[in-house]
Amino acid sequence: MNKDRVTGLTLKQLRAFVAVYKLRRLSAAAAQLYVTQSAVSMLIRQLEEELGVRMFDRTTRSLQPTPAANDIIEIAQRVLRDIDSLSAGIDDVSALRRGRVIVACTPTLAEVLLPPVIREFSQLHPHIYVNVDDSAPDQFVARLIGEHADFGIGTPDRAEEGVRTERLVGDHLSVVCRADSPMAARKSVRWKDLDGVAVITVRPGFGVRPLIDQSAARAGIRLNVAREVSLLSTALWMTSCGMGPSLMPAAYVRYSRDPDLVTRPLIGPRVSRDIYVLVKEGRSLSPAAQQFVDVLHAHVGTLSRTGNG
Image (tube, rainbow, N blue to C red; front, side, top):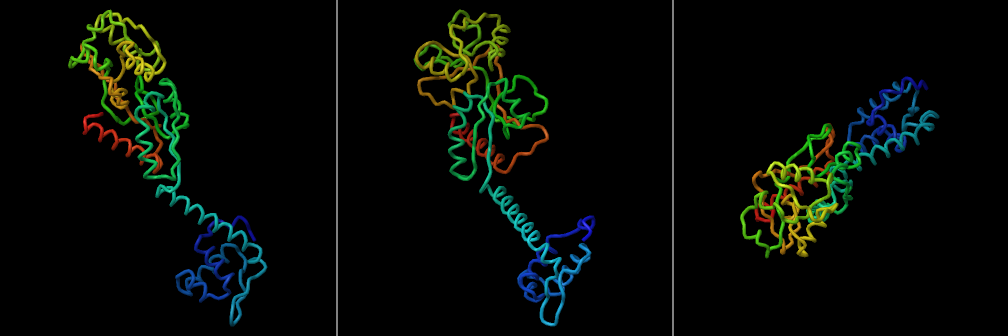
């Protein structure tokens, strides 16, 4: 058998070969494969021509395998089993019966946004594995570029090369205070109103802090940052405990649903801080990952329509 010639074998030829080998009759093989007897005969002839060797000796009543057929039957059966297994696996992935989704997200955003989304998605698709790759704000884009996650949720500090963005939530910088704070009675708070007020926010260089500092500078004030934290979730519970107002994007508070906290937009200037779904440029989402993004969008849309987002 010339190995250089085994380049044009088809699955139909292999299936015909295995069926005839097992059943020894063209008519029986044709019935099993739901084709005509002449079609099976042609497939066997094509296989023999491709391999350059006879597979069956024909008698008046049946077909008898040649030594060459006996040599390759196990290989042919294994190939077909692998193909069938691959096909079933692809069907499972397409039908969301199998797969995994890995989401890169900052810890605070993961805490306030993802739990209800993961719960709903898992109810819809219980066989899909979901994992959250929680990483620092300055690292989660790198996680996407390195393909450690399928997609990310967050706000890049600048236009990042190598990723494409899809707006998820329109957001802006706000002051967060307790419902019994005098600030809660206002519709909005000017940056100048914070002059001299002890506030809570993230440490310099962390996440949204550079934008907060730049915005305060534009307003001509020097912030009195009394407490600096690494996570916005820490700032939230500090404010809830009465330790002072916090500065952060409004969505973090809306999705946390803490009844003791209210947000008021910061104006003069008003600063956008939208949240995006980010995907590595040139990469397509798997069916499972795309379905997760769809559930995420639907959840955010529902909150917006009900006034909670």
